[in-house]
Length: 251
Image 1 (cartoon, one colour):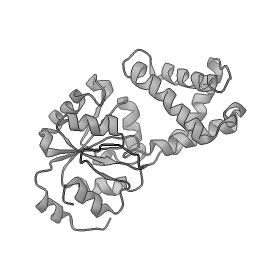
Image 2 (tube, one colour):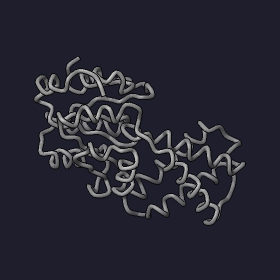
Image 3 (cartoon, helix red, strand yellow):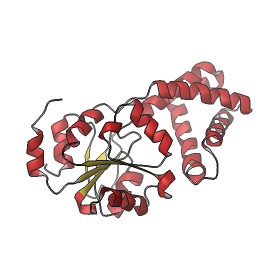
């Protein structure tokens, strides 16, 4: 893993003590795994082939958002119930009713392909490798601890992570400031000693800014925001040296 010597960044960036990451679609390529699972469902069920994979992905994301934050993470339903309800709604939105057996079958197909195709976002492991000797590395995520730990293990990034803070244990979700402040507390650093990197403007970037943490937007899909509030952004982890300069506010 080449690039400029690590000692250069140690010398120039003593004020940054911690880098906080979102996980899904920032370090873990959730969208890639998700599309593999949805493609498998389209092969199995004719009803899903009446819409494109892009449309299926968009609809699935809307359903996931409906259930994930308001029901699963608040403890109103279990993970098993959340998954069953997600696919019941997915079938319903293409005009097909699905009983428990059919939903369970769909869950099994989706999870098989989702888990088999888990991978890191390209370049993420190289970035963490470079950062590890320089700073503490934390992840703050709106999800369940077991789910996020499993992803980190599967994609080989767990060895780089010092702290994993999930909404399940924190009792609040991003963009609430409490979960960012809990992360800082566990890192034993102040807001101005940390940098937040995430893919979601509303959840990661706005949440960090409201907590007094400098944020860098990993805008992988080049979304448009009217006012970026001077927040620096990058679209890929390559070239790595450029990303490091942005993280450490050096250009």
